[in-house]
Length: 158
Image (cartoon, rainbow, N blue to C red; front, top):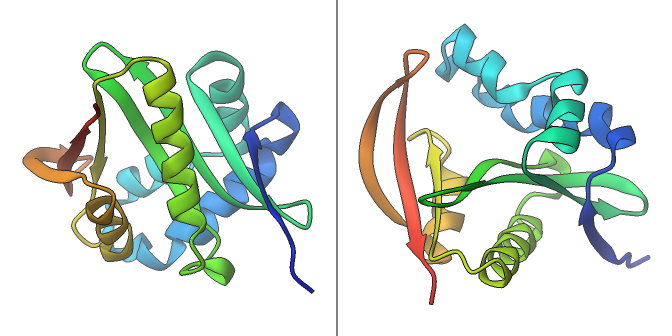
């Protein structure tokens, strides 16, 4: 049975499910992060709830009413900052990340941002390929994310 994908803004009631998704998506990479960087990446439900109500926008991708993807952005002076993105391991390589990036870009254009930017770790190869396919360019290396290597990527918008 084919299901439709729905992307909507996250609700406070989604926070625990989003936290579980972050843990699932980043869990396989835990050994590549320092403990502090991993903790800052996966977040708990309370921190997600805080972000939903006070800090930027979080979208969730749902299939059959289950959250299978998420992306979080924050309006910044230098551009729209993509703070976090994750897709369930069970549905990766099905274009969910692509649809989330498209949602972010539409939002950025509507809000008249000139640039999207993000930070990622060099071992998240799938995410890096997705960003590059969508026109992001690798920029400077950042001195440590709690001791974990990090680099910037950005994309100019028309």
